[in-house]
Length: 279
Ligand code: C2E
Ligand code: MG
Ligand code: MG
Ligand code: MG
Image 1 (tube, helix red, strand yellow):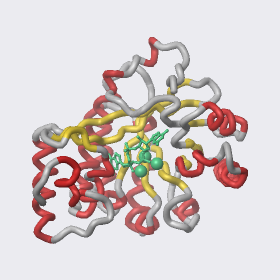
Image 2 (cartoon, rainbow, N blue to C red):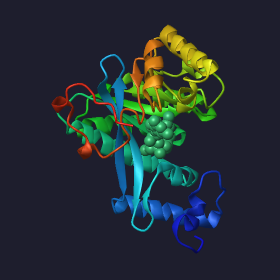
Image 3 (spheres, helix red, strand yellow):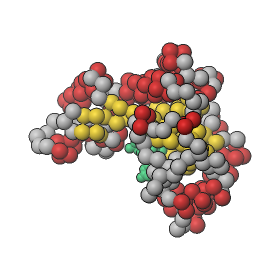
């Protein structure tokens, strides 16, 4: 790692950089130590049912509570973890932790976990999911895996693992829908139960009729295929009202709540309805 303090010394973790082979083991070692020393934490962002404005579940989002660099966001270490192949282990830690934390609560809310494409190529993922559900006691129907559109998710190996996981009753969501792999054919091939509309589309709907048309078309497509939709990145009331009018049944974004520790949330049964965040 290079010399210096603050962000500067962290540049090898930044997105899009190719790492020297000699760096790989260092990063992998650091990530492994971080797991062992319990430095990763999960933040949870509420997912809201549009009609009732109530929480239907949470998305688990990882952060690294780094002893020297402070709280790191996923963009600062996920690319490196992917490159080192360590993402498979990291995602499994998240899955276990999130299922355990959610199973402990006395509500029936769902939990969504991001899984890197690399992990989907592993044949033992279904078994890991099955064991995790059994160990934590979480009902399979409360779990959803979020996968990002890449060319790799259309590989036969992914299809096989996803089908097995879907057959357990676990939901499969396509994350960042519309920004990734250009083909829609995975909607035929993969057992998809939800698409998550990327916030890029949502941020434009108030000012751009084109954006709103894209969102409406995606909603229509999902309706035809009997797939659920969650719109990501809702930051204001106008966006929410437009999405509601367009028939979007589920939303997520800073307007309703930023990702935070689960213990910082008001227990669902104690809150009547949902209070929008004050922006
Ligand atoms: P994502 O899965 O699409 O998650 C949504 C991201 O958008 C989160 O960023 C969330 O904090 C942010 N966000 C939510 N609402 C708003 C909003 O209203 N406005 C804005 N500007 N942003 C909003 P975060 O937590 O930094 O995560 C970034 C990405 O890192 C995630 O995107 C996901 O792809 C990846 N990631 C996070 N946790 C994990 C993990 O456990 N495993 C893997 N493989 N990837 C993860
Ligand atoms: Mg996600
Ligand atoms: Mg994602
Ligand atoms: Mg997303």
